[in-house]
Length: 345
Image 1 (cartoon, rainbow, N blue to C red):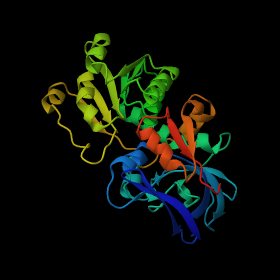
Image 2: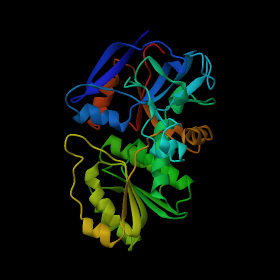
Image 3: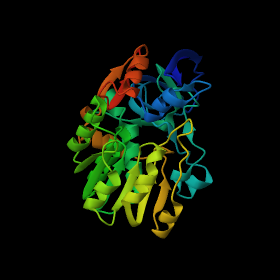
Image 4: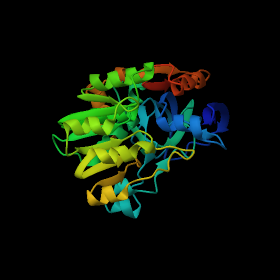
């Protein structure tokens, strides 16, 4: 069976390609993709990644249309969210209870999630109901936000600052509030564009007590006015260049959880390591691989503890995705989250 999917690279070059999916094996399921969110990683590909075009999309939902003979967890007609990378369950780390350290993960084999069909190991599928396909496509980024808060080891009632007002930053901020943070701030760039204004407004609607504009304010000074000794935790979802300021915001013995990435040279920064060492600041790299917390994320979306309508602002088809992503990268539209609806769905 053949599928159509999107591959992208620098200068918002997007190609729709037809490719062979292969046969449905005994442990596989064939999913008709109904919705796929545009991740910040996809946008990084479209802005910075030269060379071979990369498969786009991993925040996908759909309906199972065929299953292999050994599949028991889903059936034809089941609505599912797809884990982009699932722990294997059989490697030494998994069998020793360290599933978060699994490096033998199950995946879509390099196929794009922005496609009309996805062939995948059925163990990567999480059934859901009670949500639209579009709302359920927020499961993966919400699970990333949950992972960031968990990995930061945020104390109950603690103070948390999130650098970055993209979807992951906003979701992490909401997760921190739901987990019992006493104070949450979000640092964005500026309210002077429709994009910046929209996203910082969403941060306030989510319950954040403070929003800051890094292009117009001294973020470290503003936070130190409220917390002279620094905050408990900082979660960095913005580009790596913001990490040095993030370190200056946290108090002695605090933690900076880093999950913002960049390509094209932006991943390299200069740090004052002495400051981190003498202040016992933990710098923790966070990546939500393998996928965890999907069921919790679905429950939060279904209960409206995380309101999908605050995030799903723009929708696209195969033919229009490039123009919508260009407008987002140029800050021309007030998009929080773009969701692709494949043509044949």
